[in-house]
Structures are given as C-alpha cells and as structure tokens.
Image (cartoon, rainbow, N blue to C red; front, side, top):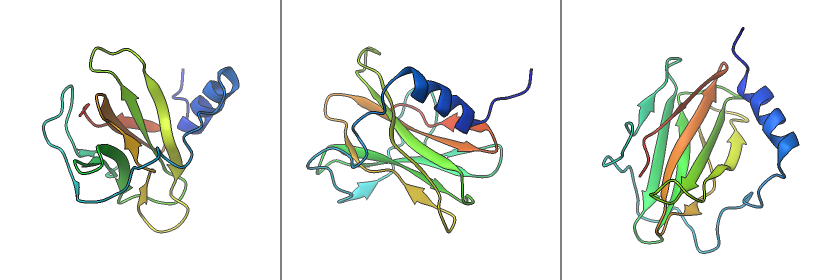
Amino acid sequence: MGKLSAAVVLALLGSLAPVPAYADGDPGCTFEEAFTPFDTTDGDNPVVMQTGRVVELRASNKTKCAWGRLSSGTPGEEIWTDRRRPDGSEYEGFLGYTRIDSGDAKYTDPFSNDGKVMRACGSSHGIIECTGWF
C-alpha cells in the first residue's frame, strides 16, 4: 500500500472531528524572547527531514508558549504543533496547522505550554516528521 499524503490524512481526520478553535493561537502567547529548546524527550529538536526540510519547535519562557517552524521548504508544505500533558493525557493535535504559501519558511501561531509538553510536526512530499516533546 502506498503512503498517504498529509493532506489526505488531514482531510480524513477533519471529517472525524471538528477543526480545533486554535486558528489564532492562545491568548497572551507571543514570539517574545524565542529560543530553540534542546532538552526534548523522544526525539530531537530541530529535525532535518528526509527531504531536507527543517522542523523546529520554538518557545518563549517569558510567555510560556511554543510554536512550530518549517524552513528550507517549498509552497504547499505543512507545519503544526501538538500538545499534551507529560503523562500523555489531554492530547491536542494539529494546533496552528498551516502551509507555506510563498517563500521557504512558515511559523504556526504560538500556543500555551504551561504545564504541558509540545512538539512541532511538518509534512513534505507525504512524509511527516516531528520534533521531540518539550
């Protein structure tokens, strides 16, 4: 069986559940004092995809928020963040889902990670890869 593209997977998931109300990020979240956390679990940050794209989780200790960044990409490629409690409960996926519309990079909106862990995921040519959880 061939690989499903991320767009097909997202379309299927979208038909099963309503689109989350996180299109504009969480209130109070900004990109202030951004850094790339390296102390992740279950993976690395940033991640260089098989296609050469770079998926990165960025964070702000000032606002206790995080967001995803996809770079070295092409229009149509996708980036989003996932969030959950450290014990794995309360999983929320596809936060800030967006695509590169022009240029070679795209950020998601920022979301609160206070008391939760987050990761960034990207899709390029039907391949999905994610950073570790921070």
